[in-house]
Length: 181
Image (cartoon, one colour):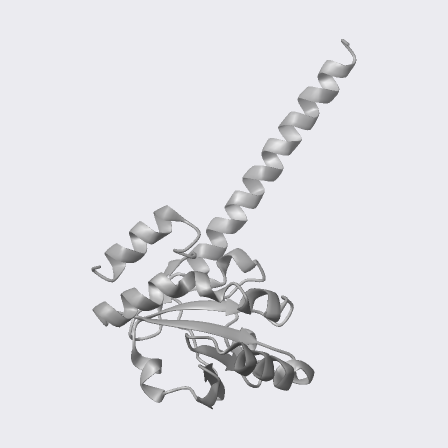
């Protein structure tokens, strides 16, 4: 047991250091994201209620919550869970303070399959598809960490809040304060 104590102590210190390094990296990433300007893709397809049309241009200059699904994630899995954002769409509609953009970046080979899936599922809320998968390339401040793929933008498309208000009560409180809700 005495010989195991130094090993346990060493492993505990190492784990604390690694945890501290991870936390420091998350803070650096958040600082890099906050205030960065997000570039929306040139070609964005919108699918809602079984209809397909281009993204309305006026959305580019409106405050918004972007929920980004990268092409490395399972798009269909995430699409099936978009109904969770219904309360935010309703809040958006009633207050007019912000827009909700559920933005999918898909591989070219999957594009038509995802559009067909959205048309058939007749999503009641608009789902936007980055037609050329340029969102990540045009926004290097967005990290690989999918927990940081939901963020709020002001009308100049600067990041003002990182996090998904649906999954985190503290983020929801901040979100409501940011948009005076």
